[in-house]
Length: 129
Image (cartoon, rainbow, N blue to C red; front, top):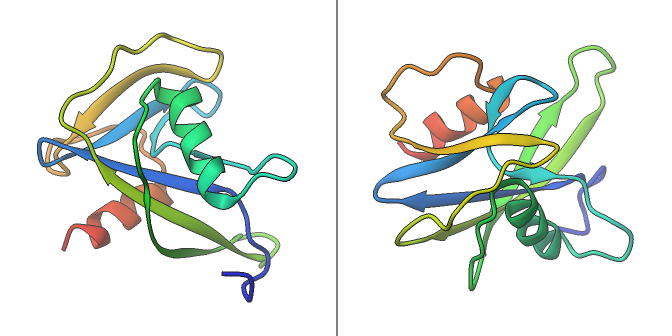
């Protein structure tokens, strides 16, 4: 992972009952996978665990590294690599609205969703194939 630059924030992909956990980002007004930027001295895995909890209230015992998501910024052309971590859970823990997330949900990839992040949508539909 250290060979890839720019290494950006981490994703936490969580599966429950054959559905994927999404959170509604109130700032961007869209559904997203739990993810975010690393804080100082934080490992990519620690970042995924923290972002998952902060955005969704979910706590996982373990996250498995699955790979790097390569994203190119359309305007600047800058490449960044996001570590992706995965876990399954049996049920969702209670959620409390916070400054970034107004709600969470499980998504089966088939039900139409308005306003989902394009990168997350592409990732999930490719991931599940």
